[in-house]
Structure formats: structure tokens, C-alpha cells
View 1 (cartoon, rainbow, N blue to C red):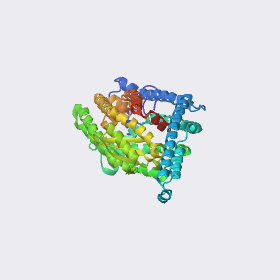
View 2 (view 1 turned 180 degrees about the vertical axis):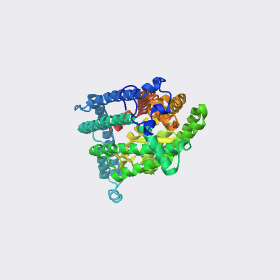
View 3 (view 1 turned 135 degrees about the vertical axis):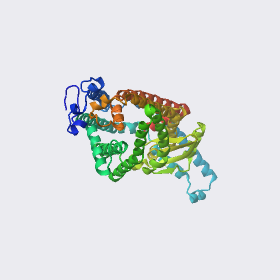
View 4 (view 1 turned 45 degrees about the horizontal axis):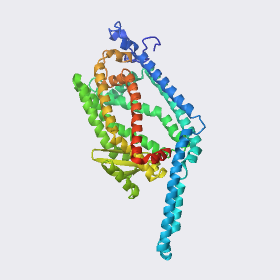
Length: 484
């Protein structure tokens, strides 16, 4: 490995075979800017992105050192508490009036016999009052804990991203990709009799499997620390080690079941599609996306969580009423046992056309009141009503089409592949490697720029969905629900 331009990986196909460049290639005197600067530019871009994101992380980290409760939030929550107190007084008055009517209408014995006395109603209301304590003092008491949680998370994020940076650069300079490919070729030939000329797709699946295994091993310590140290320390983690590793195994098996065939078909289409293969790839990824969007909620997600119908009651009736008012074709309501992994809460929807479904985390139902759940669902339904879901899907499909079109223009850029260690002219450049290096180098700046644009667009959609819920008359309930 040299540290002068052009940067060259320590391991290349030629060095791995004990050959010298001059023995197999006659293009050494031909200058190519792409090949000359490829490795250097990739490392430089990676460093620039890391430094920019680290700057943002440290800015965020500084905000977690603040000890004073935000005045604007204090004012907003104070208004919520004032409105809530007014509502509770009105409810208490109604309970008192109902109790007086019952005393006048019943002789007392009958009330004692059926167990529904004024005292029961008062006790029930007291329980409700306990659940409706003023938010402001609760948030103020938890502010330091929330700051501590945020500080731990952002610090961990900085450490893990720093590790990922060093891993990426070291792997690049050491020639991890060509080494991993040669290793896959060796495994395929030794155990299955495959070679890269006749069985490239099968060798590619071995290559992907090796990368998934190595990626799982290197990321595992960070996932364990995040789950069983940070999340547990702050009272959010509910997972057991057994459940954690069971989820890992399930995830790897699903990667094999769905990822393997997807990669194999993708490579086959690229090989057979000719110069316009990107059109067929685009159509294939579209069909695959719709297929996964269909089966994930009904087949894959139930492998990890239990989904039960929302019990009959006022909440279910109110949700259906809200859906009907917005002409949302709701067919089923589920409660998901998210509490077995975390105390974080959420709600989401899925389904196509006239078959929509809504899922509520059980933690959400425990942490907020029914009217606040409706306000949160008003936000989620706002995304659907304003077309955000469809817009994001269309954007993702356009992104896929554009990326594969650009890949088709660079598919035969052998200078790029030689720069990253695939410099044996007697061997074919694997399609999976061409894809990997394209997205890692040429497409990476475009992808990063688009990701920032999409982040801005996502925030815009969130604000619009908030406004949608507010316009439904749920402003206060949305605020209090999100504060919890």
C-alpha cells in the first residue's frame, strides 16, 4: 500500500495471485483521472461527510448540557395544563350532578346491590385525575433525565460513527473488497466446484453472505451496548438477551430468504438486459418494492411482534369515526406488543387502496389518553390525506431509476475497478462489485446530497401533518400527547 497518488489498496487481485501489474496489463501508461484519484477522492469525501456530521452532532451535544427548562416549552405546556384543569373541573361537575340525580332516583339499597354508587364514580374520577396530573411539573422533573439520555445517545453516536469511519478507510486501504471476493471464489470452488466465469451469481451470493456475517459481527458490540447499557440505564429497554439474539437470527434468516433471491435476480437482469438493463432493473425493483410492502406487515412483522385486534370500546369507535370523516378506508385496528422490547411508543398505518390498517403500540395506549391518541392519529392520517406516503414512494422509485441509469453509464469503467484492486485483466469484473463500487464512489456524493434534501422534505411533511391535526381541532391534545 502506498500513501502517494494514486492510492492503491494493499491487497489486489494481482498481489493475491502473486503477479505483477506489468505481467498482465499493458495499460499502465494510460492516464485515467477516475482511476488515478478514485481511492483518494473516496476517502476525502468520506472524511468531509464525517466532519460535517460530527459538527452537527457536537452542536446537538452542547444542547444536552443545558440545565434550564426551555421557557417556550414551559409556556406552551403551562397553557395545556390550564386547559386540562378547566376540562377536569367541568367533568367533576358533571360527575357531581350525575351523583345527585342517582341519589334522587334510587333508594340506596339498589345502588348498593349493583355496586354503582356515587362514591364509585368519584373514585373512578380520582383515578382519572391521577392520570391527568399537570404536565409541566412532570416534564420539569424529568428534564434532567431526558437531557442525560440525549447526551448518552449522541455521545454513543459520535463514537460509533468514528469507528465506522476508521473501519471504512482501513478496509478500503487494505483491499478488503478484492480480498473478500477472492475468498468467496475460493470457497465456491473448494466446496461447490463453482468458478467466477460460469457461476458468477452464485459466487456473488457467497460474497454477500460473507459481508453480512462480517457486518453483523462488527456491529454487534455497538448494538449490545446501545440496547443493554444506554436504553436499559434510562428505563427504555425491555428486551432480554434471548429475545435480542432471537431477533438477530430471524433477521439473518429473512435476509437469506428475501435478500438472496433479490440479489440473484437483480444480477441476472443486469447481465441479460443489454445496454438498457436499467429499465428492466427499474421495473423489477418497483415490483419487488410493492411485493415487500404487501407481505412485510402481514408475514414478516408478526414474526417479531404480536398483533391483536383493538378491543371494542369508545376508542375504537372514535378512531373509526375519525377515519370515516377523513374518508380513510380503515378495515382493521391492531394493538402491537411493543412493550416487550421497549417503552418507547408509536403508531403507524399500512395497506393498499381500500384495505388500510392502523397499528397502535400498547405503550402508546398506556402513556396517553384516548383523545391524545386520536390527535396523534390525526397527524398520521394527515400524511395519507396530503399524499406524503405516495410522494415518498414515487421519489424512491425515481431515485432508483436515476441511480441505475447512471450506473449503466459507468458500468464499463474498468479504470475504477482497477483502482480498488480488481486489476487482473484476465479475470472478469463481477457485476456485484461494479454495483458496490459505483454506489460507494461515483454515486455517494449524489446520494448524500439527496439525503439532506429528503431530510428537509421530511421535516416539511411532518409540519404539514401537525397542521393537519391542528386543523381538525386537536391542537391541545396533539401537544400534550407528544409531550408525554
